Image 1: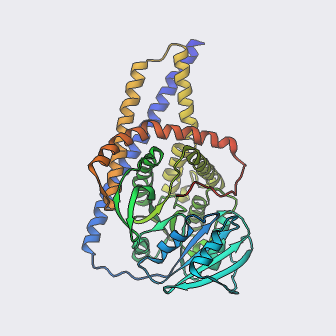
Image 2: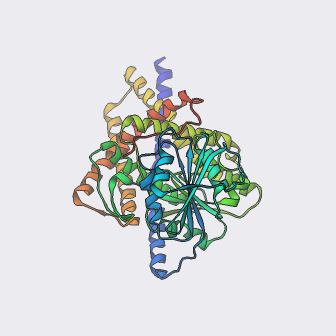
Image 3: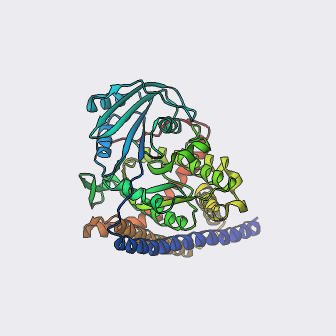
Length: 461
């Protein structure tokens, strides 16, 4: 028995060393290539600093469910955007609070009998309101509850412009966000979607919709998410953007070609990861129909969003995200190892499979092997502690590099004290926080099949 266990642990250790080494190499390449591309992009912007933007009409879709606390401030921030022309479409997905009434009272919205052509299936609307504020049309649609994807389909049916942006009701855009996110489409007419950069609103002092100064909040949960977002939403997506390989455009801020989305059938109302599922669907539709396309990532287009402030809300959010990842990849599993999809299949899809979807099982199995080795007296505690300490330091250094890129691209000012906090948080996030979330994602699979269409809710401030 001991001999068998020893052999098992030997091969398991080889597997985990290879697994961690590949992840370390990917993280390093993502940051290095990301830094180079950001430098190149910054030089191009300086050369083209007098570039005149051609304004493409954009519809901003804001699906909302029980958002009475944040909805007014979010819409007011959207009205302050420096762009034209654009419209705002708020879809109240059967809220049980005063979300709609607050909008009606705040902007003096009036009922309208405008007809909506239902190109995409969704739950029926109850009432429709409109108001023109400072030349911007605000439309409010009250409808039967159907989930976020269903609400977005209603918004696509109702919007008037050829490009639309989806964003969360608690999010805010900077004044120049639309100018930045439309730029890839101006440069290349084959672009069908563009993802923006998410910035955690609890960490930035804002004035007149412009980010001014960064500071870490007292809440440790929020601070650790700042470091995590910098690594997840910047370096890896810039790397995948270089070969048209991004599989996720965040539902909190993404730009899409309306006609292309309608052609694919729109958002899936039964998928928790409706944002990723749509992107995978677009990849498949364009590849299968030999349509030349690009999906871009624009880190200079900034969206301010709130993140969970408690471990309870964070667990609920990450369970939902992980189940959405599983659903999306299962629905589009034919992409895997499919030569028709190129690097989307053989790099991006496999990365999300092994380092996102099944990673919780691999890491939990790793912990089990450590316990098993200790039980049989086969564990070299000193070597194990040294290995994981070095790996945590390496990961912390990579997170620090990502965070620095994060600050650079957004031109945020940060104090010396917060820079010192960053060193501690990067090591804590990579060495401890991400492993805590591993168990959250692992437990998510045991809740599969429950509440697939329920909106995710976190406490708003």
